[in-house]
Image 1 (cartoon, one colour):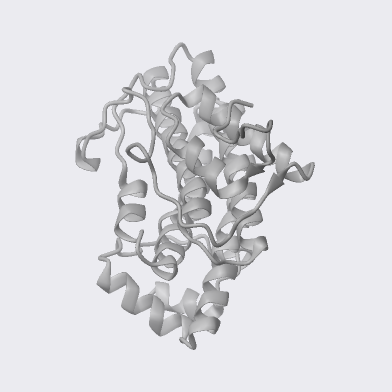
Image 2: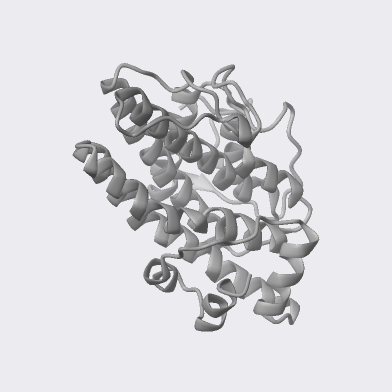
Length: 277
């Protein structure tokens, strides 16, 4: 693997957070996806060390991303009819872009926040690996439709929230996996139904894989949010409301996938609060 970790006495074990930062800064999509997969394999094999206390600094703009897709405001992303091949391709492209952003979000969670338990970093590496798989599945399906990632404009709302919360891990966990990404749990079933109705059963099957994995990813967010609140002596429900207001998080609107949200670890109090937002 092409990584930044070498030494005059010979190759040294990769360091997880430094290597996560390296791949986060990588602009080439294929190299980033491959690098994340290889890093996860190396971690499982015991060939990666962790320095949870290191103070790291990026040497290039984050995140690394290709020249295309063109980045536009969310309101400028066009919606086309699902009844046309191009309309379905636009949707698959939008989903692929979400997964590309999700890879970057997981890598950012690894390198940016120091002094967390080992399990925290292992969890987000697993998330990065699965998001890379999701991107690959969607990208290949998009190619089967005669398009490639980058063919259509896209927006970066997910990363914009990550930038807002870069100074506080509690805000990051509360408002990215538990808010922005949790919306995917709500959106996935109706999108899947539209794809299936249009006859794109391959895309529907990919959405099944993504929903299954995303329940786990949001669950990881819930677990570490609860852990951080306990460490700081905070009430999770009132703290979330305060953070959502402070960082101007999107207002949650239904319908909500309550079954998936329960499976991801949201409490009944939190689910009841959704209906009052």
